[in-house]
Image (tube, rainbow, N blue to C red; front, side, top):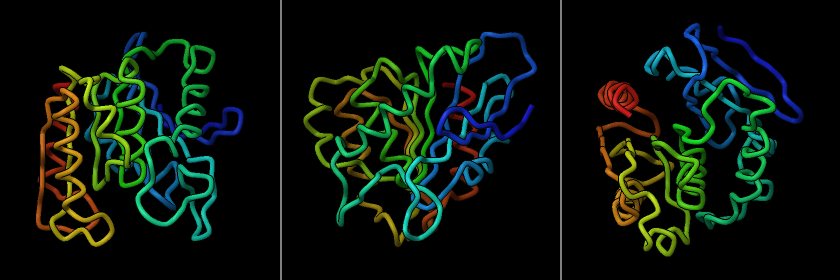
Length: 213
């Protein structure tokens, strides 16, 4: 069942599986100026027996849409600048709101700024992460120190990026791959000749990744 719901301060798009509970959870985090609808294009590639949640970020941006930082500064953000959004996500993803969902090992997917948020929460709270997929994203500053203790050892990660990305340069994806591997993650890396979006080939790879992880 697909529907849009409101929980406290959140607006969410959700898909409830028709299979018996409990359900695994996949959380889809949009990028800067996005909303709860923009990530839904990926839903068709995700396992039908997974509970999908696509939240609208809480902070309106000056360009329209919403973002994951309340007062963004110029330049690439520090990993701890995403802490307020992460704490609000933990409040949302509670047994009170999702009683029949496995909240102990969530599968995460983020695009652009949403991918940076996924990187941040994975390194800060690895116990809440089963796997992560980051599309056209960047690794926030300060992640190297957290990666030193291999908090993501044995966890699976998927990175997709465009060689012609004019918003987040390709070197950001290479840096993210190196840091995730340093953190112990097993990284699947997909790059195509495309801009700030997901290519058809990496789209197929994303579906294969979530089917396996």
